Image: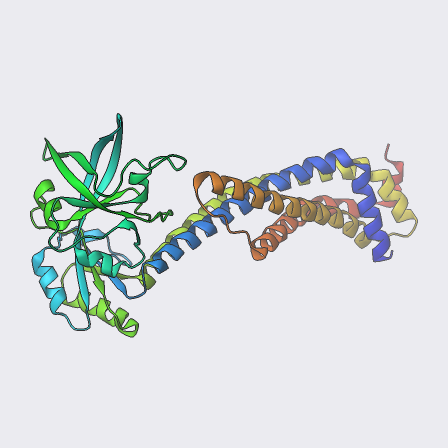
Length: 397
């Protein structure tokens, strides 16, 4: 038989059995949509985080307490902290231009027009804003070295409701309340600056930036820093300086933009593999359905198969007819599933604030996986059909 005749018979057979074809199609479509949607969301999350890390600047190094790396956990069983000694050592190391310690005081609450809000308080120096050039001020100014009991606030603090009017302006005073060592303390700060809205995973829209010395006194941090940021103006020296920091200061990790991106890519890659695997189970379940329906189809078309063999069709022709039916089911289901998955991923991403990243490569991989799954699932029924004896098949009722 000509390949064109075989293809026509396969397509015509699917058209005559629309209901079963639709059932198989739905199974394949759901599996492909799940894979496409989940992976596109994960890829979008990876791209968003990488973009924000890149915005931090390739010349910035963040020093954190504890070792991070293959086979190492944070601290490796040893309590490590950052203090003024580490700050002094960093300032004395070569090729380092700016150093800025930070302290995360924790959460605090404040009241505006009868509504209670929670905010993250971070203690920084004036150098912090020089290092983090992406942190732009919309109104007012950043911190000065002489500042005390003032605050630079994130955009969402000033405008809690995106569709509403600003509730806080430069010059306003805000009373922060926090639990410090099981004791309630109150700190009143004057707003000197409001940051531009950033959005994203690493946004500072809901943060309060307060002078480091004020946070240390209020939250009683005992001279300990959470991180120390370092600026290396010569981008070619960033990795070397990071290595030197870890070598000179015991028990710390120096994170560059490059190393952070590698870690994030590793984490999101694992998430992508797990979610893709879970979604692929749906496709395998659909494959079982294809085996079932094609086996029933072979039984129903036994006499038809016998007639084709009696007219000269070879076993390989019969095998190819059924394999093409399976492949067409997988291809149509894969294409529709990939398209639906991209739409679903975009809708979910918009709802949760993640940019889904649809790609042609992902679509082709999903369609290919669907075709392979369908062909493998239809292999046994197709082989069974090709092995039928024409005499016995014609006698079948």
